[in-house]
Image (cartoon, rainbow, N blue to C red):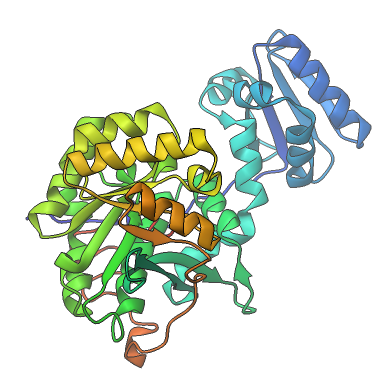
Length: 388
């Protein structure tokens, strides 16, 4: 088996940081440079334009605050096109400025990284993470058949980090793969001791898995350590994290299946591509997008839901109706043929007690903490946590 033992894998490396007091912005659009210069000067920054009007150098005010104000002043296309970085104000070589700016991230990405910088240190303490669990029920007898794990984190002060901030910080800082690995291992850890024979649904990010036999090894080890057979685990491909490389996604899915796990496709119905994936991946479980469920009993939504259910049953997949909030919605999706239901009507995500106490802070055996050399194969792969 391949190993990451020779160095720190991407899923074990903490995020980098953006530091410096000189803000450098590059844009091929002259009006963008002019607009940013005006914003900067309005808050007291010194603005200098170089490289034939393509690069803006800003100094004299707090860099983080300035970047956030620049980000707020631009339209979405402008934020994506403009490149930005922070550099120390001394020792900058103007002759290499353009070359450096070409490799900078978008202004929007830099702003997001700075906005969430206070959360970057969370990945250095895996004990800061816990999973909430939301029940999934059989729609016919309302018995609980499983739970979806939803990753959460707490600051050193004990405050829970909103899910949107947590995953936004990871995406902005380039450590989604680290968070993904932590999420999968945390879900298995926190489900041990009480799951019994029920299913455990864990989300994953396919783009975080570079090579399945390496990147998913700690998932297998964690499942064994915490006594949860992979046959009880359902790995969900979340719509917002799908990859355009369907071949790679199929390889990851097959890796899980060969080890006994099942595969779910989440948010089906939210876009045409999700229907294509149902046919291509042939998932074991199809989860219908909650927007369709919550629109019921609207006839148009009901027609789409019925079509997805028929398609899913045609390939032998179970169907979960997500986002059920009322008894009427539950009754309608049951009549339409859905098998399972999930949503606040059946239970909100909660922390569960019952796992052995030593599991609360112990890392998976044979795994190093982020930022250190790993002693064995690593594992990224999922936002093992939905933003619910």
